Image (cartoon, rainbow, N blue to C red):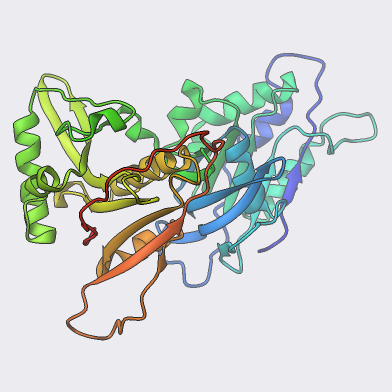
Length: 391
């Protein structure tokens, strides 16, 4: 990756918009061409199945992070900042590696301790011009809450037309998502429970209805069984399952005691829309793995990040179980879905011939990294029926 240019301290004796802002609000230069990148949707930086230390000595896992030239991302809190520092080359990965275009140029604009000052201790406007003259592909905007002068510039940058129309990627580093930040950004870098990931801001309105069949409700954190539109949602689940798995997964979930959970989008004055569904078997009953039995997204909802959202949800549930109770997350992936699960770090546990035309599914596992202390007592229960099939 090319060196990162930095613009740090901003000093002003006035609280009005500093003169430097006028420079920064000039049309930003078009990013220099990147060899082989013909579309602004093509990835220029990505992280998959990687590890990074966020705070202290705790290592978090990165499932899937991606930047393209049209990205508008808010990096939230310590988790988001860790990903930004990996992007800028200021933080090393604890495992895995970043994929970045050889010609990638990133510029950071913000207030920090280093300072880019003239002899009188004032902000050097020429430094901003110089930084942008490299025609960067990614601009990182630092919130800089410690500097009132920079905060004024920062707020104007979030809403000015020149920044909005910039032909490269913008990453906003912020402690929280203000209305101005959300008006510019469409995606989020965030993390929790030992995981870091990227998600659509539009997905905040989505709801996960867990254990809608009521199976094993005493084992789940909560069981939501809304009645409005449920019959239609379950019917659609069955139809989607028939398309992908040639079965009725709702009926199979009832038969085998799987937990069936739905990702839905509530709609005003309309029944909720199905975005994805998942069947899983929690650990217990003599098994120390959480098994994802089925995961599917309707054809009309594909490419919305819905499958990824459900996977993050179930992996975080696993992370909140003691290691002695849940040591692994397992699934049997359709061969066509293997790249999706590999982004989370799942590993092919077979020695199958993938070139075999009759081969269609593969057993995969991911070691669970618990974020909770071991339970004092664990109950061993009756064994479960062998139900591991394709996801």
